[in-house]
Image (cartoon, rainbow, N blue to C red; front, side, top):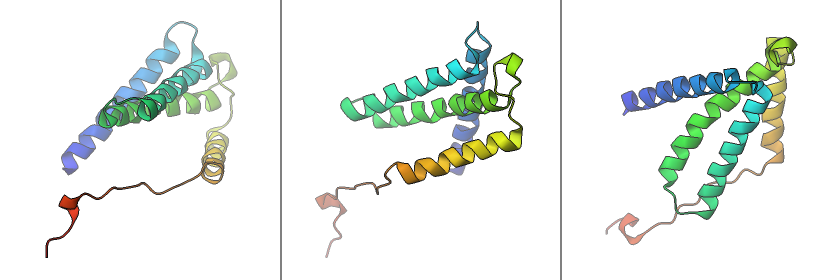
Length: 126
């Protein structure tokens, strides 16, 4: 099972990063607009998860892969030079901005435990 995990991680990282680079380098999209494209795609995945019967497993893996180009685009947007479509922040400053954003999301967005419905088959015999 561990081999499957590492294959999935490697595949998603490679595919996601390549997809992000391709979108950013195609035409005049740039890093900021590219990030918005992937953010919108993730919003569609969230809507499909909430309001349709589409396979939750397929939606998970799609979202898992789409977070890679989104993260790469946001990182590139923060630290690439202005003439390349970025904000020209240093890497340490860009990392600090991202860390502050993640920590703020932890406090602002509600965290709740998942729910699990037990069936009769889950009850121990005896």
